[in-house]
Image (cartoon, rainbow, N blue to C red; front, side):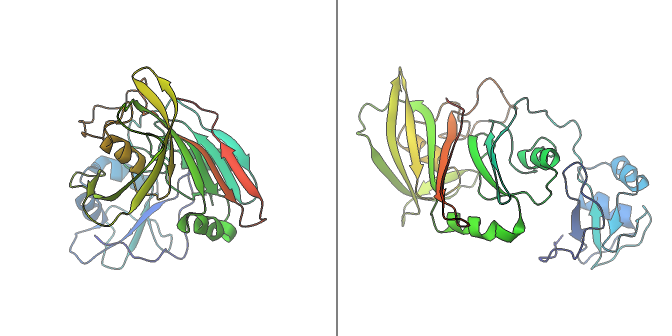
Length: 302
């Protein structure tokens, strides 16, 4: 199945509960009708669930025409539908809006809450929550923050100035500070700079360090000692996925409650009593619109 690389000209279904309709372009293939195509492409979605969506008139083509289970399908059609998740796990923590203007929305995100829909999360995501709360369907996260990580994250509120803020991150003009709780390293001298080459590992969504030209860099200092652990201050100069988790683990100090590094543990569901002890504490930059220096700080602590 291939998706058209271009966005459709318009959405034939309205945004519902903060979620835009999903869509896909039909590839080359042979199917007896629409239901045959949908059940073959989405084997994890039951036939009855597709029939329910079709009966609610929530499956349409790119022209907005309502499709039936026996509607003929062919290559080049675009089918729109609403993604649904049965028994979505509620995330019992709330986000806090730190700042909001015509260009930016700055939020203090709790642990466990995904930023965008994906996998087993849809309504219980920061983006969908914020769209429903603000009524702004143009909200878009400007940078990444892992589901397990809490702290400050920026959203663009309008397409008109989104590129200006995205450019700040692309050119590394944003200064981010993280806090992490991890084991004490008595043989290390701090502050230090950790540099390495990081690449995708064979396991899904996990990174590894390999030989080769450096592509990740983190400045690491100790804020205070806490028994067998230290509270670390981390300042990433690059933005590789899982960079902070990987760098501390490679030094011999994996972040407390990290289920990915140094060893990926089997998924046993969320333990809300044991959040990853990693916090995006602050973010600072010179605003590209008005030239003002801005700094936003999380009210959370580890």
